[in-house]
Image 1 (tube, rainbow, N blue to C red):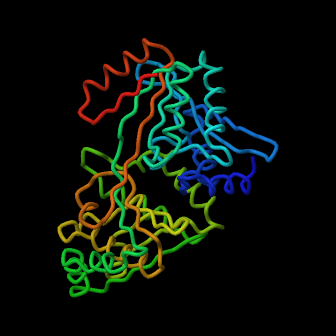
Image 2 (image 1 turned 135 degrees about the horizontal axis):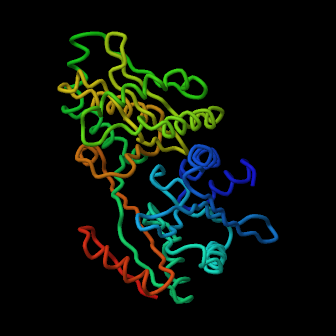
Image 3 (image 1 turned 90 degrees about the vertical axis):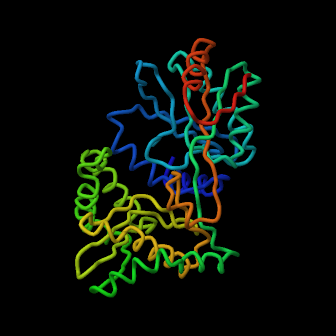
Length: 342
Protein backbone atom coordinates (compact mmCIF):
# COMPACT_ATOMS: atom_id res chain seq x y z
CA UNK A 1 0.00 0.00 0.00
CA UNK A 2 1.53 3.29 -1.07
CA UNK A 3 2.13 6.44 0.94
CA UNK A 4 -0.77 8.45 -0.46
CA UNK A 5 -3.37 5.72 0.05
CA UNK A 6 -2.02 4.88 3.52
CA UNK A 7 -2.13 8.47 4.74
CA UNK A 8 -5.60 9.01 3.28
CA UNK A 9 -6.84 6.00 5.26
CA UNK A 10 -5.05 7.23 8.39
CA UNK A 11 -6.49 10.74 8.02
CA UNK A 12 -10.03 9.34 7.95
CA UNK A 13 -9.55 7.13 10.99
CA UNK A 14 -11.27 8.27 14.21
CA UNK A 15 -8.03 8.61 16.23
CA UNK A 16 -5.73 9.88 13.49
CA UNK A 17 -2.31 10.94 14.77
CA UNK A 18 1.20 11.37 13.41
CA UNK A 19 2.01 7.92 14.82
CA UNK A 20 -0.29 6.27 12.27
CA UNK A 21 1.20 7.97 9.21
CA UNK A 22 3.08 6.14 6.50
CA UNK A 23 6.20 8.15 7.35
CA UNK A 24 6.17 7.06 10.98
CA UNK A 25 5.42 3.39 10.32
CA UNK A 26 7.92 3.00 7.47
CA UNK A 27 10.66 4.77 9.46
CA UNK A 28 10.08 2.54 12.46
CA UNK A 29 10.15 -0.62 10.34
CA UNK A 30 13.42 0.37 8.66
CA UNK A 31 15.06 1.03 12.01
CA UNK A 32 13.83 -1.90 14.12
CA UNK A 33 12.69 -4.72 11.85
CA UNK A 34 15.77 -6.78 12.76
CA UNK A 35 14.41 -6.97 16.33
CA UNK A 36 10.72 -7.56 15.54
CA UNK A 37 8.73 -9.29 12.82
CA UNK A 38 6.32 -6.87 11.08
CA UNK A 39 2.79 -8.20 10.60
CA UNK A 40 0.38 -6.18 8.47
CA UNK A 41 -3.27 -7.24 8.25
CA UNK A 42 -5.28 -5.41 5.59
CA UNK A 43 -8.98 -5.56 4.72
CA UNK A 44 -10.48 -4.63 1.37
CA UNK A 45 -13.92 -4.30 -0.18
CA UNK A 46 -14.94 -3.21 -3.70
CA UNK A 47 -14.08 0.39 -2.82
CA UNK A 48 -10.49 -0.49 -1.90
CA UNK A 49 -8.59 -0.97 1.37
CA UNK A 50 -10.88 -0.18 4.32
CA UNK A 51 -8.75 -1.40 7.20
CA UNK A 52 -5.11 -1.90 8.14
CA UNK A 53 -3.68 -3.29 11.35
CA UNK A 54 0.02 -2.36 11.53
CA UNK A 55 1.31 -5.04 13.88
CA UNK A 56 4.46 -6.95 14.78
CA UNK A 57 5.39 -10.16 16.56
CA UNK A 58 7.93 -9.94 19.37
CA UNK A 59 9.09 -12.22 22.17
CA UNK A 60 8.17 -11.74 25.80
CA UNK A 61 10.35 -12.36 28.86
CA UNK A 62 9.26 -16.01 28.96
CA UNK A 63 9.64 -16.53 25.22
CA UNK A 64 5.94 -16.09 24.48
CA UNK A 65 5.01 -14.80 21.05
CA UNK A 66 3.29 -11.44 21.46
CA UNK A 67 1.38 -9.56 18.77
CA UNK A 68 1.70 -5.80 19.34
CA UNK A 69 1.16 -2.63 17.41
CA UNK A 70 4.11 -1.83 15.15
CA UNK A 71 6.17 0.77 16.98
CA UNK A 72 4.85 -0.11 20.42
CA UNK A 73 7.10 1.68 22.90
CA UNK A 74 7.86 4.56 20.53
CA UNK A 75 4.38 5.58 19.43
CA UNK A 76 2.32 7.35 22.10
CA UNK A 77 -0.98 6.54 20.36
CA UNK A 78 -1.78 3.37 18.41
CA UNK A 79 -4.88 2.15 16.61
CA UNK A 80 -6.13 0.38 13.51
CA UNK A 81 -6.58 2.44 10.36
CA UNK A 82 -10.27 2.17 9.47
CA UNK A 83 -12.77 3.46 6.93
CA UNK A 84 -16.33 2.65 5.87
CA UNK A 85 -18.01 0.07 8.11
CA UNK A 86 -15.36 0.14 10.85
CA UNK A 87 -16.88 -2.62 12.95
CA UNK A 88 -16.87 -4.92 9.95
CA UNK A 89 -13.25 -4.01 9.19
CA UNK A 90 -12.14 -4.78 12.76
CA UNK A 91 -13.97 -8.10 12.64
CA UNK A 92 -12.12 -9.02 9.43
CA UNK A 93 -8.80 -8.12 11.08
CA UNK A 94 -9.67 -10.26 14.11
CA UNK A 95 -10.77 -13.20 11.96
CA UNK A 96 -7.36 -13.13 10.26
CA UNK A 97 -5.55 -13.11 13.62
CA UNK A 98 -7.77 -15.85 15.04
CA UNK A 99 -7.17 -18.03 11.99
CA UNK A 100 -3.42 -17.75 12.65
CA UNK A 101 -3.66 -18.37 16.41
CA UNK A 102 -0.97 -21.07 16.24
CA UNK A 103 1.57 -18.35 15.40
CA UNK A 104 1.02 -16.27 18.56
CA UNK A 105 0.34 -16.72 22.26
CA UNK A 106 -1.19 -13.39 23.19
CA UNK A 107 -2.22 -10.12 21.53
CA UNK A 108 -1.32 -7.01 23.55
CA UNK A 109 -2.54 -3.79 21.97
CA UNK A 110 -1.11 -0.85 23.90
CA UNK A 111 -1.84 2.88 23.79
CA UNK A 112 -5.26 2.86 22.12
CA UNK A 113 -6.95 6.21 22.84
CA UNK A 114 -9.84 5.55 25.24
CA UNK A 115 -12.24 7.37 22.92
CA UNK A 116 -11.47 5.00 20.02
CA UNK A 117 -14.42 2.92 18.77
CA UNK A 118 -11.92 0.11 18.19
CA UNK A 119 -12.15 -0.82 21.88
CA UNK A 120 -15.89 -1.46 21.81
CA UNK A 121 -15.57 -3.35 18.52
CA UNK A 122 -12.88 -5.61 19.97
CA UNK A 123 -14.93 -6.32 23.09
CA UNK A 124 -17.92 -7.39 21.02
CA UNK A 125 -15.97 -9.45 18.48
CA UNK A 126 -13.82 -11.30 21.01
CA UNK A 127 -16.86 -12.12 23.13
CA UNK A 128 -18.68 -13.57 20.12
CA UNK A 129 -15.67 -15.65 19.11
CA UNK A 130 -15.08 -16.95 22.64
CA UNK A 131 -11.78 -15.22 23.43
CA UNK A 132 -10.88 -14.07 26.92
CA UNK A 133 -10.03 -10.37 27.08
CA UNK A 134 -8.32 -8.10 29.57
CA UNK A 135 -8.63 -4.34 29.39
CA UNK A 136 -7.09 -1.62 31.52
CA UNK A 137 -6.36 2.07 31.47
CA UNK A 138 -2.71 2.43 30.59
CA UNK A 139 -1.45 6.04 30.56
CA UNK A 140 -2.81 9.50 31.17
CA UNK A 141 -2.35 11.93 28.30
CA UNK A 142 -2.70 15.59 29.36
CA UNK A 143 -3.32 18.34 26.81
CA UNK A 144 -3.78 22.08 26.65
CA UNK A 145 -6.85 22.65 24.50
CA UNK A 146 -6.40 26.00 22.73
CA UNK A 147 -9.26 26.28 20.23
CA UNK A 148 -12.27 27.93 21.93
CA UNK A 149 -10.16 28.15 25.11
CA UNK A 150 -7.79 30.89 23.97
CA UNK A 151 -8.12 32.99 27.13
CA UNK A 152 -7.36 30.04 29.38
CA UNK A 153 -4.40 29.00 27.21
CA UNK A 154 -3.08 32.56 27.38
CA UNK A 155 -3.36 32.54 31.18
CA UNK A 156 -1.37 29.31 31.35
CA UNK A 157 1.28 30.74 29.03
CA UNK A 158 1.66 33.74 31.32
CA UNK A 159 1.87 31.86 34.60
CA UNK A 160 4.50 33.34 36.89
CA UNK A 161 6.24 29.97 37.18
CA UNK A 162 6.93 30.06 33.42
CA UNK A 163 7.70 33.75 33.03
CA UNK A 164 10.12 33.82 35.97
CA UNK A 165 12.46 31.25 34.40
CA UNK A 166 12.49 32.97 31.06
CA UNK A 167 13.07 36.37 32.70
CA UNK A 168 16.14 35.05 34.51
CA UNK A 169 17.91 34.05 31.30
CA UNK A 170 16.87 37.25 29.53
CA UNK A 171 18.28 39.35 32.38
CA UNK A 172 21.60 37.52 32.50
CA UNK A 173 22.34 37.06 28.79
CA UNK A 174 20.98 36.71 25.28
CA UNK A 175 18.01 34.33 24.93
CA UNK A 176 16.62 33.32 21.52
CA UNK A 177 14.21 30.69 20.19
CA UNK A 178 13.80 29.07 16.79
CA UNK A 179 12.08 26.07 15.24
CA UNK A 180 13.46 24.27 12.19
CA UNK A 181 11.48 21.90 9.97
CA UNK A 182 11.98 19.76 6.89
CA UNK A 183 15.51 19.04 5.75
CA UNK A 184 16.82 21.76 8.08
CA UNK A 185 16.33 19.43 11.06
CA UNK A 186 19.07 16.97 10.12
CA UNK A 187 22.15 19.15 10.81
CA UNK A 188 20.98 19.71 14.41
CA UNK A 189 20.35 16.08 15.36
CA UNK A 190 23.86 15.19 16.56
CA UNK A 191 23.77 18.18 18.90
CA UNK A 192 20.34 17.15 20.14
CA UNK A 193 21.50 13.58 20.82
CA UNK A 194 24.59 14.84 22.63
CA UNK A 195 22.60 17.19 24.84
CA UNK A 196 20.05 14.49 25.69
CA UNK A 197 22.80 12.01 26.60
CA UNK A 198 24.41 14.62 28.85
CA UNK A 199 21.06 15.51 30.42
CA UNK A 200 20.49 11.93 31.61
CA UNK A 201 24.11 10.91 32.32
CA UNK A 202 24.51 9.45 35.79
CA UNK A 203 20.77 9.04 36.32
CA UNK A 204 18.76 5.86 36.80
CA UNK A 205 17.39 6.26 33.26
CA UNK A 206 20.25 6.84 30.78
CA UNK A 207 19.43 8.47 27.45
CA UNK A 208 17.80 6.30 24.80
CA UNK A 209 20.27 7.84 22.32
CA UNK A 210 23.10 5.74 23.70
CA UNK A 211 21.51 3.09 21.45
CA UNK A 212 22.45 3.44 17.78
CA UNK A 213 19.11 2.03 16.61
CA UNK A 214 17.26 4.83 18.39
CA UNK A 215 19.49 7.47 16.83
CA UNK A 216 18.96 5.86 13.42
CA UNK A 217 15.17 5.93 13.91
CA UNK A 218 15.11 9.63 14.81
CA UNK A 219 17.25 10.42 11.77
CA UNK A 220 15.12 8.26 9.49
CA UNK A 221 11.97 9.93 10.78
CA UNK A 222 13.43 13.39 10.15
CA UNK A 223 14.24 12.39 6.57
CA UNK A 224 10.87 10.74 5.91
CA UNK A 225 8.90 13.71 7.26
CA UNK A 226 11.06 16.41 5.66
CA UNK A 227 8.71 17.07 2.73
CA UNK A 228 5.58 17.17 4.91
CA UNK A 229 7.26 19.34 7.58
CA UNK A 230 5.45 17.48 10.36
CA UNK A 231 8.62 17.18 12.43
CA UNK A 232 9.65 20.31 14.31
CA UNK A 233 12.99 20.66 16.10
CA UNK A 234 12.89 23.63 18.46
CA UNK A 235 15.95 25.24 20.04
CA UNK A 236 16.33 27.75 22.85
CA UNK A 237 19.78 29.35 22.73
CA UNK A 238 21.44 31.18 25.61
CA UNK A 239 24.41 33.34 24.67
CA UNK A 240 24.57 31.53 21.34
CA UNK A 241 24.64 28.01 22.80
CA UNK A 242 21.78 25.45 22.91
CA UNK A 243 20.10 25.75 26.30
CA UNK A 244 17.19 23.41 25.58
CA UNK A 245 15.89 21.48 22.58
CA UNK A 246 12.72 19.65 21.62
CA UNK A 247 12.03 17.00 18.97
CA UNK A 248 8.28 17.07 18.39
CA UNK A 249 5.49 17.07 15.83
CA UNK A 250 3.18 19.64 14.29
CA UNK A 251 0.43 17.56 12.70
CA UNK A 252 -3.23 18.05 11.82
CA UNK A 253 -3.69 21.14 14.00
CA UNK A 254 -2.00 19.66 17.06
CA UNK A 255 1.45 20.28 18.44
CA UNK A 256 2.82 17.13 20.12
CA UNK A 257 5.31 17.21 22.96
CA UNK A 258 7.61 14.25 22.33
CA UNK A 259 11.32 14.36 23.27
CA UNK A 260 12.76 17.34 25.19
CA UNK A 261 16.27 17.98 26.46
CA UNK A 262 18.28 20.71 28.13
CA UNK A 263 21.80 21.66 29.18
CA UNK A 264 22.26 20.12 32.64
CA UNK A 265 24.72 22.86 33.60
CA UNK A 266 21.75 25.25 33.87
CA UNK A 267 19.36 22.78 35.51
CA UNK A 268 18.77 24.83 38.69
CA UNK A 269 17.16 27.57 36.59
CA UNK A 270 14.68 25.17 34.89
CA UNK A 271 15.57 25.57 31.20
CA UNK A 272 12.94 22.93 30.41
CA UNK A 273 10.22 25.34 31.52
CA UNK A 274 11.72 28.09 29.38
CA UNK A 275 11.51 25.73 26.41
CA UNK A 276 7.94 24.80 27.30
CA UNK A 277 6.81 28.42 27.43
CA UNK A 278 8.23 29.12 23.99
CA UNK A 279 6.55 26.01 22.56
CA UNK A 280 3.13 26.79 24.06
CA UNK A 281 3.44 30.36 22.82
CA UNK A 282 4.27 29.13 19.34
CA UNK A 283 1.27 26.77 19.31
CA UNK A 284 -1.03 29.62 20.32
CA UNK A 285 0.47 32.03 17.78
CA UNK A 286 0.13 29.43 15.01
CA UNK A 287 -3.52 28.84 15.98
CA UNK A 288 -3.10 25.16 16.71
CA UNK A 289 -6.14 23.42 18.17
CA UNK A 290 -4.18 22.01 21.07
CA UNK A 291 -0.82 21.41 22.67
CA UNK A 292 -0.72 17.66 23.31
CA UNK A 293 1.65 16.65 26.11
CA UNK A 294 1.18 12.99 25.02
CA UNK A 295 1.46 10.10 27.45
CA UNK A 296 2.82 10.45 30.96
CA UNK A 297 1.57 11.89 34.23
CA UNK A 298 4.58 14.06 35.08
CA UNK A 299 3.59 16.78 37.53
CA UNK A 300 4.53 19.67 35.24
CA UNK A 301 2.02 18.51 32.62
CA UNK A 302 -0.86 18.81 35.07
CA UNK A 303 0.15 22.41 35.83
CA UNK A 304 -0.06 23.52 32.21
CA UNK A 305 -2.94 21.45 30.78
CA UNK A 306 -6.72 21.73 30.88
CA UNK A 307 -7.73 18.25 29.72
CA UNK A 308 -6.62 14.71 30.49
CA UNK A 309 -7.27 11.82 28.14
CA UNK A 310 -6.45 8.15 28.73
CA UNK A 311 -4.95 5.37 26.65
CA UNK A 312 -5.96 1.75 27.00
CA UNK A 313 -4.28 -1.63 26.83
CA UNK A 314 -6.39 -4.38 25.24
CA UNK A 315 -5.16 -7.95 25.65
CA UNK A 316 -6.54 -10.97 23.81
CA UNK A 317 -5.62 -14.36 25.26
CA UNK A 318 -5.44 -17.37 23.00
CA UNK A 319 -6.61 -19.88 25.59
CA UNK A 320 -7.65 -20.11 29.28
CA UNK A 321 -4.07 -20.78 30.45
CA UNK A 322 -2.79 -17.58 28.82
CA UNK A 323 -5.70 -15.73 30.37
CA UNK A 324 -5.01 -17.10 33.86
CA UNK A 325 -1.32 -16.18 33.65
CA UNK A 326 -2.09 -12.68 32.39
CA UNK A 327 -4.72 -12.09 35.05
CA UNK A 328 -2.34 -13.26 37.79
CA UNK A 329 0.28 -10.74 36.62
CA UNK A 330 -2.26 -7.96 36.63
CA UNK A 331 -3.46 -8.87 40.12
CA UNK A 332 0.06 -8.14 41.36
CA UNK A 333 0.13 -4.72 39.71
CA UNK A 334 -1.00 -1.44 41.18
CA UNK A 335 -2.83 0.00 38.16
CA UNK A 336 -6.57 0.19 37.78
CA UNK A 337 -7.98 -2.81 35.91
CA UNK A 338 -11.08 -3.62 34.04
CA UNK A 339 -11.99 -7.22 33.23
CA UNK A 340 -14.09 -8.21 30.25
CA UNK A 341 -14.53 -11.97 29.88
CA UNK A 342 -15.91 -13.33 26.64
